[in-house]
Length: 489
Image (cartoon, rainbow, N blue to C red; front, side, top):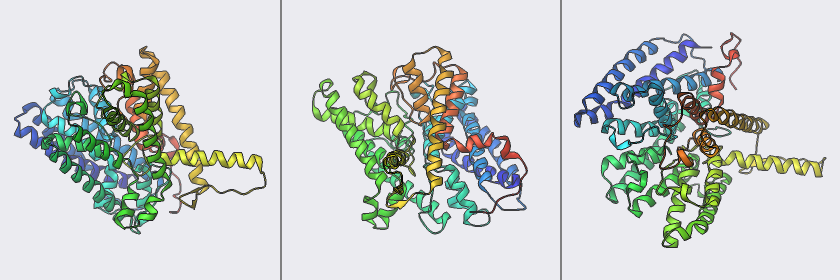
């Protein structure tokens, strides 16, 4: 284990967080928010001290293997969450350290679950920081580090880091150079973010509100600066803009890259994209038919159905209405969409559409094998044969996923809330969505839970965002045993 390399990278991550705290500190200075400004300055001083200290650990060997990639990823997300919670705790805005940690983990993991009952009471600087954690965590701080700097001896070492943080069953390169590919991802991410802000400003939304709404949309996080979420903006235009951009940020960014390269045919042939859009359109149609009697017109029903399907499937979590009041059929569809999630390689959470496609194809292959034992059938995705290692990782992921759901659901039952509340809270946090049903619905929050349950849900958020393995490997004893490093593959 290359501890010096790990320390150096975590130090750089903390310095990135230090820079990210400058804008909200400036906002607190502008609005004369004394307590918040002091909290930001203290946090920045601590980050500078710890960050530069860790960066001073110059690695003698720059070799970087899979184990280091997983460890750096898990530790980075833990430490940025701990330090990111300090402004809320030190300012007194969230006096409980567990609550502050829960809120910031929810931000960085783009979950959007909150313990706050009066969001609008927060100082402006903290509102900005709370929303910006979504944008920073959406694409990933390690991908950003990879885009702006180089480390390790060769592309293979960098790929270990990208694989550890990027969501999806498999991670490849979109350009021959990995650093160039990471930079391209952020260029697309920033471009879409800027375009959304422009559309929101054109609809009359104030600049501060537009930025914070964009942070939640781009990171598919859903933290709003209003207690009523997007319902606080009654403009159909603004809500439709957010609907479209939530759906866009749930698309695999490789598709956008193909479109930029004018490879339209390959982009449109992408199986995951077609399934993603098919599930979304089908769900919108079914919910619209089911809820139209609750609204004055079909157009209104379609508007709210499209917004909530886009919000839940992309795991954003914004709301225009309280879908707790929808018929059971529509609520059930939303719960199913919580599991489905967005596309691999997007900022969305959930199981990912590509994993479900692979699972269905694997099941079809097994059925075919039973009927025709001697037949040879290869599982393909986008006309490419899938490596057996990818299929094995998908199977392991699904096993760990459902085991985590069951264990977390069991622990939360200690608080003695209803099954729907507990179940949807676990599913919502593990899939990085935010709102669930009943007590944790769009008009509720997670403040009712005990500290133990909040910590379990915070761990679920991290497990969901990192897709289990980096965090599990971090706490595996075998990770820290001395052993001969394998060759880079």
